[in-house]
Amino acid sequence: MLKKLSHFVHLENRTILSIKGRDACEILQGITTNDLRQIQQSQSTLFLNTNGRIISEAILHRPQIQQNGQWQYCNDEIWIDIDKDLKSTLVNHIKKFLIRKKVSITDYEDQLYIFQVYGSEVKLNNQEGEPIIDPENDLSEESDYRNIVAVDPRSSSIGIRMVTNDQPDIKEDEIKVEKKEHFDISRLTEAIFEGKEVVNKIPFQVNFDFWNSINLNKGCYVGQELTARSYHTGVIRKRLLPFKIVSNDNTANLEDLIITNGQSEIGKVVKSSNNFGIANVNYLDIDLEKEYQVENKILSFILQDKLRSNLIKYTKLIQQRIQ
Image 1: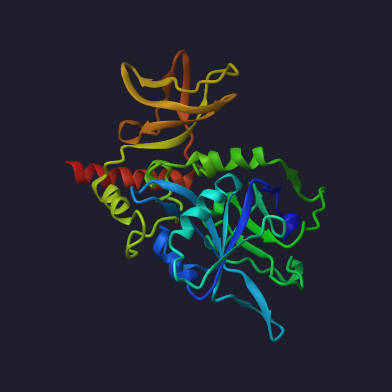
Image 2: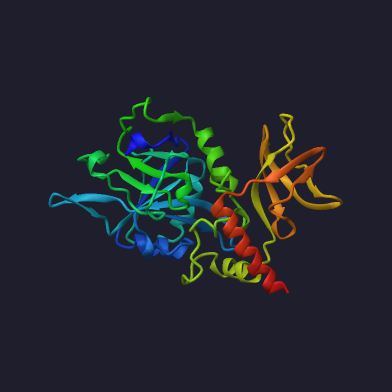
């Protein structure tokens, strides 16, 4: 499997929290935006506060243990794959719901490792969140837990998520070992945001409805009422979208500068580096085929296939509702 892939990165900024016990799945079902009953191997989700704003994004994983010589999914444990900087905040949030519940939380920061395998050579037929089983190159070890190898549940376009007991044996002549910043650019060009990039934002502002992270048919959970209302009324008119500078110069930092279409303001730059950036944009006011201006520089929005099709569909839906 690995020899067919192009980039490999150890996500040292991420950690695994285990929530285990008879009531673990019930608690998570009531405080996350996705429907845990539909999880395959991995699932993207959000933890919200009562105002419907993001406390943390997360990827949930179903661990497997050996029973009678066979690997079987745990029925009473879920792993939470989150940014280390948000770990204590999330633990404190979860503990609010543990009164009289049979649940324990364990930090596996020094025991489990999180990796991403991604790039243009990653061709996946599996659906997001599905396990990848390759009998000729199974990375699992005979240990307490089986290594997790699954299609990234947010989008197959950013590759494979791995949670392992140890550093995989990687041959660098077959796959490029990258730094985290390289993967960050890859996911940001898809408008997939993580960690502190999403804290205190409305889920739709950071596109989580596009990345299999919100189940709008699910029952009640913390923040559900405001999330459903925001989606159905279309009150969120701005989204974070990636852009590139198409001028020939290597541009300086454009943070907080206004993006214009003639005399009209359509958004503001949130962050930029070299000729790439992220902008908070009124998506109803932009033409995806047009170029726009920030000071004396020309930019165009980068929309990969899945992002483009999702944005077009949602824009049409909102336009119909406001007519």
